[in-house]
Length: 128
Image (cartoon, rainbow, N blue to C red; front, side, top):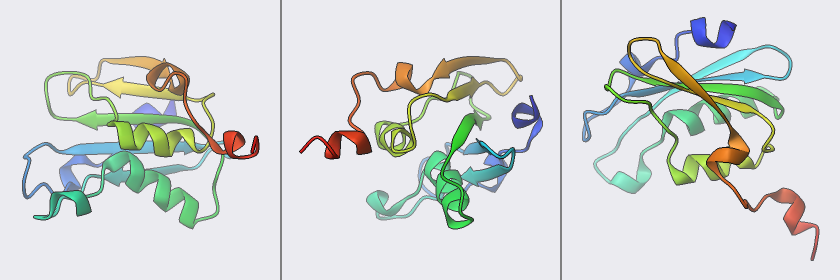
């Protein structure tokens, strides 16, 4: 899978506070890959996660349909998206793969719907 061979860029992370570098690579339905890294801020709530950075880069280039995302770090365990990232990812459907990776290259694959079950999305707004 080209997504796993891409460089999600945790080494570019702006980790001024947590020392927890994270990179993400997002595969669009059209086969393009967009990467992102976390960028922290002394005002913690203004920081940006790698997953949301990759999604925002893709959206800014006109892509709104995604097939998969790989999340990487140099930490020892599998990296999972935070709740805010899961909800942002959910905005674009639940039927895509999320590759949770370790620094040694091992990974597990979860469907987004597994990471955010019973979710609320754009189609729910149409029920009103």
